[in-house]
Image (cartoon, rainbow, N blue to C red; front, side, top):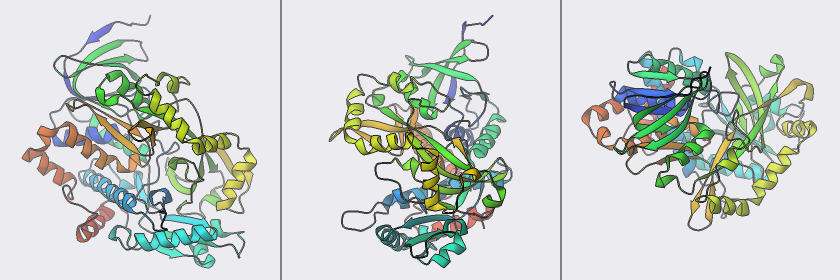
Length: 499
């Protein structure tokens, strides 16, 4: 018989909701900063990192803006905007600093289990796109974070970099590519498992799998009453937490809404699903060693930027193409078809309607993607690999992304492509919404969260010294300090085995 009784627990310091890269990063950081903190983590599935952090879902590329063209838009005057690219490149360097620190401490084992060197490339065709990529490289290479980025519009040179992309291509076709040898492939599933495994060894930490957080309610003392259901037994219990982090991927919006904090008002979510073509021929897989990103279709979300992607998954080299975007009303890959509808509230219905009104190209694009036939998907692949054959590729389901919708004074509502940290005014609860480049920038995002929610602690000498130990560049700008940036890259590349 299922026991549905509710038990009460004493107050603990931190509750982490979701066993993904964000909760794992925050939990490890907080235990490093203050070892006596008590932490409980709750994950609704029975495994760690099974949603967005899993390598076959979404995460994989170490996003550093080397190859992602959507981070460098062309302005009306023809110039290339690189501010976002610089910020993301700097953030990824910060993430590598923290991982290198943990490797030096013996906390993550062999770094090759989660990160390895894979060149990052952009590839385009057509006169206008070739000119755009040339301008992009010229703009980026002037900044030290992009030093060494090569450009070529010579088919023979590009063939040396990516032979599969050039074989069978019209010799007269105008194409160009950039090549960045500093690129990486990151298995965020492996990294998350290692982080949570390390955190779980610490005293005062409890990791609860197959536990669903059902409700969040503010206590009179400013803390939170967290109601949790053990899915295997049906038992419910409540515990009191001084701080709650909602890092539940697509499930974060519903929990944020249940918290009732003023800062949650007006937020909504737009789910985007995806599919991969996965190469099933090892002899083809071994011929490609790069992450090759192209230009997204007009109206498409950034997560659907097409790429021919070398990855390490479960210790084996893999070759993926996609993702092909789609639409589902689920907020999680293993979520409910009612997720979108139950997220609609009086306080966010106007922003949702405004986004629907202002984003017809996106809606049209998703409809077209959903209607694609196997032949359509193969033709898209052939843009990047002309000799591709259907029998060499299998279709696999990628993860769910929930793009952030929020209030906007000018347009009533706006669709945000990125990550958004939402926290209460008193810093007692924080939630992470959104998608790419999320995982790759998890460390700076969590530092920002700690600065907002642990304001008194972070000012202490103990925390400041520890932060500088974990992230030597903390408090300084890698984007503005070339010497520091080069020294940081040299150290992290050596520690992480990326030389």
